[in-house]
Image (tube, rainbow, N blue to C red):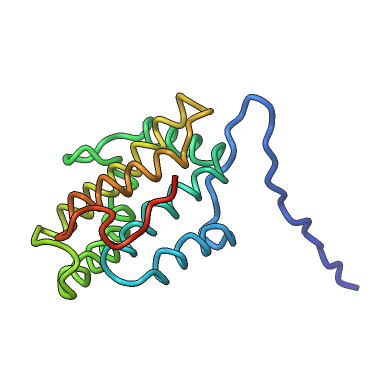
Length: 169
């Protein structure tokens, strides 16, 4: 009679003093953040949604973001300064953002600029918040999301920032 080995599923657990594992790309929060950014109308609204959904994800995964920042800081650097092991993933992740910026330009909501440069700059700003979060666990990510969204809305838009949305105080 042949014995069948039953494997127990591995359970992810945080141990005191150890950083959490990075989030799984299939995690419902990851999927939701991506969907929010894609669902927004093209142009300014999508740019704002991209910024805000990324920082909202960080707010819900502080320990994982801190762990990722610590790992990336420890990796050897590529010629452009990016962690060598992460560079191909990073470059692939910029393509949809650059495409979204091109679409915003095509419909006349975003001014003329190099979409690849703007995408890299936006991603660098978001990633910098992750590194800052590692040193400041109480960082107000909602405030950072608003400021970054306003900053890039101003930098990329043809019309004045806030012209197509109402402010509430």
